Length: 353
Ligand SMILES: [Zn+2]
Ligand SMILES: [Zn+2]
Image (cartoon, rainbow, N blue to C red):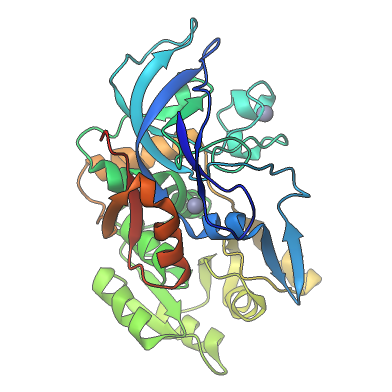
């Protein structure tokens, strides 16, 4: 197989010839046709995450080894089955669930692989979609995109399930109950599309940028709130028609967490998704008296990916704008993303696809 791999952090990707893995047991070898270029690939390429306050989280310390073919938004065709793999056949087009765990613990067996303590994510701890082939440990990690555009379907494995999983944590709610989304960037717009797809009728989008608020309205948000200056909580409560039950914070910085938390009413939930960084101090008696929940949410699980794909197949999910670029130009794609020249999603397309 070939891979466009990180060999040294912060240096151009190198084209490498690697042995094509042989699927064992329940494993399935997938030949990559499409792979989204995600913002977190940039952090991986650089070798660290900024935690805020000048602190950095090194990916090397977290067990990421080089060379690595990044890429976790993968669609491809089944190329070879391990002796115990069933349910798919050679040539089938599938989305590959990338947020893998050990495969044997209680969480993994309950299909909550992303909650496993042993992280084996594709494109992070194992070669991903910046290579020509990936290994899915089990056919249950493969989801049929049906007639969906594979370039769009690829993005469901990351940005798609990230917002879907967060929204699921505040559901069920009556369709007219306000759901507040903090941040109207890529994730925020995807969240609006998912809520619209779920027929939700009261979406409040919060952002500092007038341009992004306009995009949120265009995407179907019912109300928008300016997140700059003072009194943001007050404006959220006004837009929502009262203190709220559900906030999904896709930014999750010190300021957004504060105004989001302060907007909650009894039984309210704040779901924290973004990695902006910072801190939140909680008034502990209120946590108890109002029975509040502050919960983190990170990517999602295979069940959620299947549900999201079903929602998309029903035709109610507005697709993110995607552009494709040959897989061999992975580094150029990454640099375009770094330089802020990408609207929507840039997706690598294999020559064979
Ligand atoms: Zn991603
Ligand atoms: Zn596990």
